Image (cartoon, rainbow, N blue to C red; front, side, top):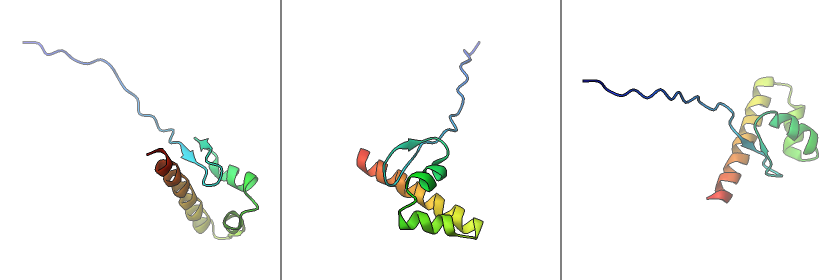
Length: 77
């Protein structure tokens, strides 16, 4: 008895799309640069850019990414 084997190899897509919290544009990379260039006048973005502790700054930026994604997902569904 022979069993058919699937030869199709699917590659995983590692490009996660993040959405801006303010303008809701999609980004696959460099969303932190977008925040620091386009939304520097927002108080929360200024707090992140003025933060001296890199770990805290990175954590705050991650929170911004998640909030933007949540806002997008809430609007879509």
